[in-house]
Image 1: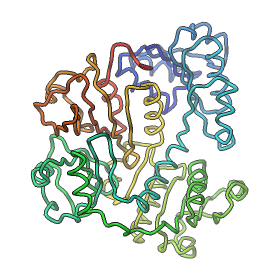
Image 2: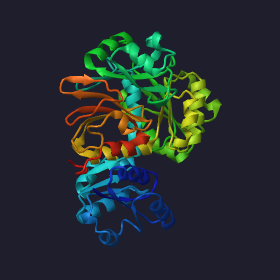
Image 3: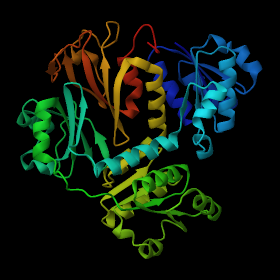
Image 4: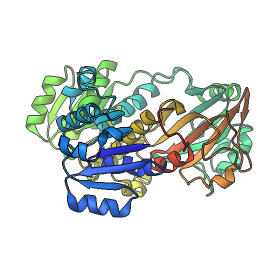
Length: 453
């Protein structure tokens, strides 16, 4: 498949890395000659220096011969123009990154008017995942995610005390036919593969198995009616993510406080949010937090524009005893820090948005997809004969540490696979993968005819 990406920022680069894993022909366009030169030298792509908004450049690369163009520059208006021009010049599908709430409020109109096939919004994607985590935690009836005859359940390890302290492989044997496919340790999702991973009392466990067996386990570990509606949430950072999230929580009925250091931004937020309390100040000011009853919050969400500040605030919130602490972190290099902090959920907007784009491109190949804590994805896929993983023992697939084939549904039979299991054409396979390993997941699902199948 032939794909053009306009804008070589974090999102554009992430998408390029994922797509070259699937043997696609990728062209990246950016005005920064130095950056585009380094990119072309490090990745197997065609790099073009220039302004993607210029029709002459789009004609020069013969954009009409491309199956898809993705506009990921730093400005919404530019992305709209680029995507629309590419469509009119004959590109098969066009995707635009839009971030401003004003544009998202009229997304359907923009897409129809400018012939844009898909819109992605990193800030909205993060807000949706945080909202889902907070709201579903307090409203799920049984904690089970269903995918055909296979089900997944999340529960805290201390619900089954006999599991605490065991290695995951030992725990799998104790659960009899139900497999632990992931753990959330202090906010970091870990997929246990080759290395021994031991279960802590406060770890969130994600288990997969046949539907009836998982339903039975759910009755033992899920306390029906334990939670009430989430009531009080404090958000540090009144940027786009904070605004989107506050609106969602308002609609749910929660009481929301937003802290932002920019007075003009606070005034803007007050015009967009009806019930949230907008506070102008420094979120790291402990006296301000105490004045606003920081310790009494049900949840604290740190989504400022600075990773270091988000980490500091998350640590302060955890030390204050707040039950749910969530942070937006854009740099994967902070992973080890996060694991030791006890944060409940950490999200990377680039990973989430790139994942959404890839799912759109893959079309009908993916039956269903579920994001887990903003860091991993559970997908259900029908296996085709020419996929890279077909008819090979799982051991020969050499899966990366952040990926596992969790379960296979073959007809009405559910298989919990081991390293000798072969995936066959027609199987419905459940794969769990860290979003950061999307590149390897794309290679695994590679098919000869490309996307849009």
